[in-house]
Amino acid sequence: MASSNEQALRAELAELRQEHRDLDAAVDALASSANADALQLQRLKKKKLMIKDRISMLEDQLFPDIIA
Image (cartoon, rainbow, N blue to C red; front, top):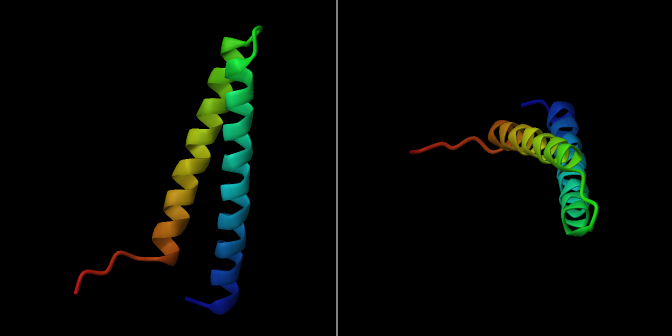
């Protein structure tokens, strides 16, 4: 894998991990509030799941599971 491509993937991975943590905090805050909007909570959870899937895909590209 080209070094610049690998650096770009690692940067995107770091950004997605941070966004995932931020969404996790937002979901926790919204869920614990008294006037929680169920639709907003569902949307945040769906976005969080999509980011998690993208993180998994990038990790697979960067760290292939090679069985010798």
